[in-house]
Amino acid sequence: MRKIITILFAGVLLVSFAACGGSKKDEKSEQATETTEVKADPEAEAVDAEKALKDFESYVERYAEIIKKMKAGDVSIAGEYSQLSQQKKQYDADLARYEAGFDAAQKQRWEDARTKLNGAVKSLSEKK
Image 1 (cartoon, one colour):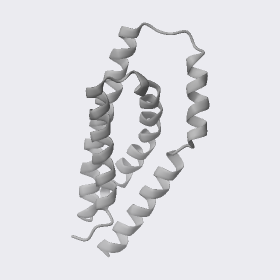
Image 2 (cartoon, rainbow, N blue to C red; image 1 turned 90 degrees about the horizontal axis):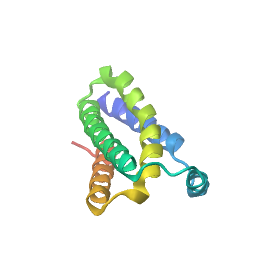
Image 3 (cartoon, one colour; image 1 turned 90 degrees about the vertical axis):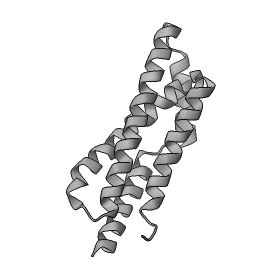
């Protein structure tokens, strides 16, 4: 029964990621649109980028905890999992907007968070 639940959650996870993903073409046209906007204060942009990155790191931590609960067979987290899946789309959009302005440390933190998120997703399919 646990394997079936795990497989179902993994399927839902894959579908949610596929639904949230966009093509590179869409991202480039979105970035081109953003560059035509009036540039905001660079200092304010840096603060917003840092906040978006911290929020994403918190999101990844919550997501990893949900995955652990899913692997343990806890189905009571389905609602929270659904909310987190919805939030990913917003985080992707926010971070894509700020990515070009990240300094080296922020880029590394973003990469580390994405690696942790991918590891959590992959762990669903691994045997105990």
